[in-house]
Amino acid sequence: MTNADLWKQYDEYTKALTANCEKLGFAAAAIAWFFKTSAGTFPTAILFAFGFIIFFFAADILQYVFAALFIRFWTRNQEKAKWKANQTIEGEYEKPAWLDYPAFIMWWIKIVSLLVAYVCIGIQVFFHAGSA
Image: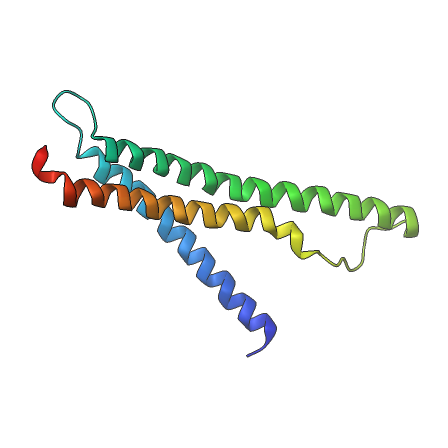
């Protein structure tokens, strides 16, 4: 298996994980909504779940915002330098690994946020369901 094949496989896994997490985020919100009381309130564990669901979707958006902004500003600076040196922007660019770090960190944050949201729902289901 070539390096390119390995990165393609990694890309497929992360895209599938993100797509499934987005579906699970909406599902978590729907599940949590079932715990709304007749008084219109939510149990504490469910409020925490909603908070982590919101954090999940915010991190999901920020992952792509950071990725786009970092690559845009880095690329534009590289183009300016290449233009100044060669009067062209065509050619190879060696992308540094650090450009992906902010997006990668947000990717992890959103996954952990979703898992914590489901833990909060699980706490409500398994430890507080009888007290409602």
